[in-house]
Image (cartoon, rainbow, N blue to C red; front, side):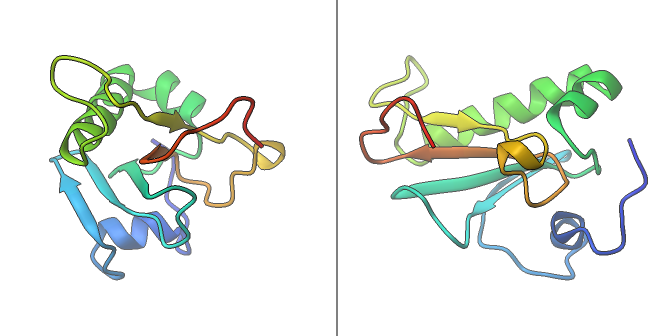
Length: 123
């Protein structure tokens, strides 16, 4: 874990200083609706510990990386984008890492997107 910057938006949400629209929470993850949704369902899933990128999280805590992925899938099931048995109707997970990828909040987060046809390639 890296030291959380005082101005980290997601750390402030985890600390309760800012109230997001929470859809799911575990001991180590928090999921909330994106304030600028890019699909009918757009939920962000963050670890409660501060890690800047997915690569940094994977290097520091592979178990939490797996928990983050499991939490994202649980959100997809909860939101009707998948079933416990399979990925129907479907969803997309996005993890932007670094400025060229469009990461604007430097606290790792997964975007759970769905509810419409998501074309490839994105961007």
